[in-house]
Image 1 (cartoon, helix red, strand yellow):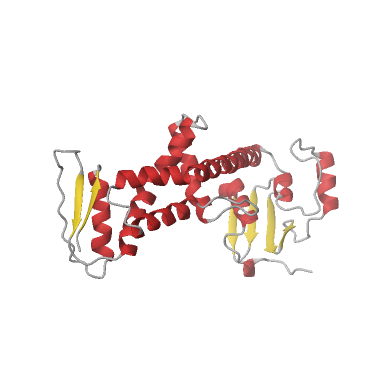
Image 2 (cartoon, rainbow, N blue to C red; image 1 turned 120 degrees about the vertical axis):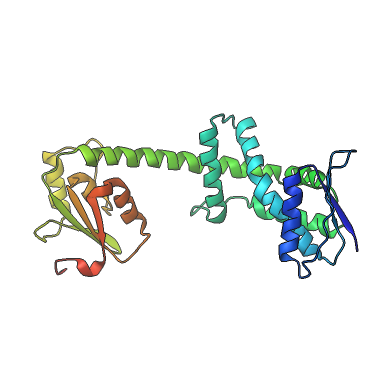
Length: 275
């Protein structure tokens, strides 16, 4: 069986062919590609055995690698009026992360999966021989989901941007604040627990007393779970973190804020016996 697929972009034609060559069970696929005078197209002619899943996956590979981010950039520029290339790049970078791991409680349209299903249907229904036509139809099919995804993506980007501004502010405070505490130990076994250099545990009473003597405009009240606040309140010259939980968000945040002032050690290195 012979199949001829046309592309206006040479690189996309090569991606299509390379995917088939690398993944088909019979990888002796003949490629006849040339720029035709009429229509200025690259034609990929497949003259060996192939399967519809192979063809659809090859097409979707181009959509995923070459089109999805370009479509999102177009939405950012023309529907949400973003013009800074660096900011657009940051938003698109975040999109890849959120598409795979949406934030808790946030429902994001799976634009990638919808595009993949669209491509599969077109290939199975023999409605595919020109990639540009299919790409345009795919964009039309996923456009409303793309708009919704981009809107929610921007909400998350603004939250992340605000979070980073807050982290930067805390980092400056920790760096510039003159602290009466040279060293603070912190352990993580569920909740964060703090200890003074002598080994006595930091409690709410000590924190409230310190805040009364050293008011901090960024900290007005103490929540039931103190989290990273004791470290911020005391801003020690050195923060010793003891934990076996790599990737723990609060500990990573402390490392990010305290930078070179923070040292991470296994929990077994904690120098005091816990009551």
